Structure formats: C-alpha cells, structure tokens
Image 1 (cartoon, helix red, strand yellow):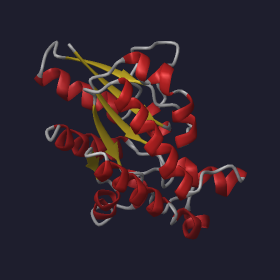
Image 2: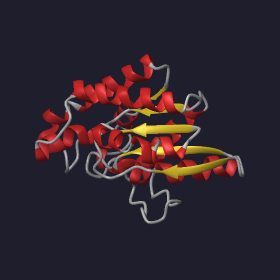
Image 3: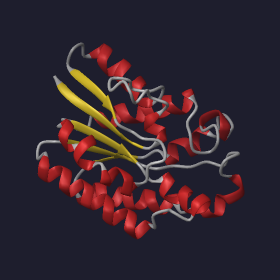
Length: 205
C-alpha cells in the first residue's frame, strides 16, 4: 500500500481532528481520498498533516516529524498564502526570496531522505473576498509566491499544479465567495476544484 501525504496550511488542514491521525478534514484531501480510494480499493493510505496558519518556515520546522518520518510515497504541498497574510496582519510573514529559499531547502532535504518520493507542488492562490478585499494590493504578493513555487517545481523536475487561473476562470461562472469564502479558504465547491486539479496532476506522476 502506497502512502499519500497532504501537506500545507489551513486549506489542506480543513478542520481535521488532530487527535485522530487518520482524519483527513473536510477539504480536498478528503475528496481526493474518496475518489482515488474508491477507484483503487486498498491501494493507497491517505495522511493529512496540513496545519492551519502555517507558512513555509513552519512546514520546514516540522519536516522530520510530519514528512520524512512518515515515509510517504507521494506528497502534495500547498503553502504560501500565509507567508503573505501573516505579514499583512502580524508583520510576521515570509518574503518571496526567503520563501523560495526555504521551500527549496525543504524539497532538497525530503528528496535526500526519501529518494523515491514523488512530489506535487500546488500553486498558492487568492481571490477578492471579505478577508482580503481591503488589502488586495498587498495580497498581490501571492503571485510572487506562486511564481517561486512553479520555479521550484521546474528546478526539481516536480509536478506543478496551477490553481490561480482555475479559480480566476471559476469566478466567471459564480462570484469569488462561491469558491473561496473569504478570498482564501475554499468552500466545498472550491475544494472540489482543487481535488479535480490534484487528480489531473496525480496522473502525471
């Protein structure tokens, strides 16, 4: 049985019960496990270690416990919006240059410890919503994080999962809050969008 690890911030965490290591939360990780598990009975074990509020430096700080020690065969990582958001709200963000540096270090160390691991990098994203609209000029930096994430995927020959354009296109069908309730956190429909893009990318591994 292969282990698939979902890693990231609150978007991945999705209100999972952290006292229950098997709980996948209520987001795209849960939806992926439902479809992939149904189509491939007994083939995969799904693990969610996303933690609400995390920045890239926080994921890096727990690289041993929540990535390497789990020995996943596949890991997907969605991180970056808090690196911007925490700077806006708490002056404790991570600048794009440092974001890329730490992200690269994380990927290098994971690949060194787990040479056969397959990694998917999900693009951080943002829309205008009640949690972001007053600072959309500052949230524009999420595009810099997205650019860095894509560059890291290319440099390490990893699968990159574009999401910003998908959410932008979705707003032509329904308002931003239909997909991302506050401009950052997905609604069930937003999580379904991520799930579909995740599964498309998974086929490329």
